[in-house]
Image (cartoon, rainbow, N blue to C red):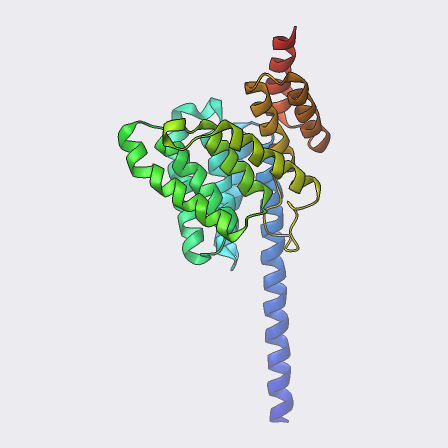
Length: 255
């Protein structure tokens, strides 16, 4: 009888744990979808709501590193949003804090290292002192991300963006940047953005084509730029940055 009772208790506890874990994963999946969708809107209110959802999920889930990543992801999108320029530093700092904590919990979380590198890079652009403080951190975090996941399209894209905007004297290289984006797009088209774990990030396909278009535009290759923007919109028809900024600007410059 005692053995039977102990077995019953174990089964009940295991079922409770499985149910709680499933609920935690469901919350993370919904948070992921909200943050990734919000990033495509270029709307501050939508992004802040997604960030707040990620913070709420953080308090509920046992997979805190993933929730912290989405807090950092939303903060990153806010930091680069033109309408949030006055609060850009605060958003960047909040994103850095969340991603540093995520990496403490999951040191091999490659996506977190890459996004952290991008936020460090943004801070490094704030002048000589900021460059000295954050430039090395950005480089180290990106190297770690690439070492962990060399064929992750998101990481290749973020590294390419960094190479594109970094001055040549500090290691920037627009040719290498475009090569990164070409590879990121190829990998994304093959399905490499996806993950077997539904809670993990799977964004990047539309964004890679958008950034490839930016780099083609910079090189005055307008036909390839247009093709890249159009592919981005095929993937994400409501991608506001491409739909309302990049493609109209390209069309106007081609007249």
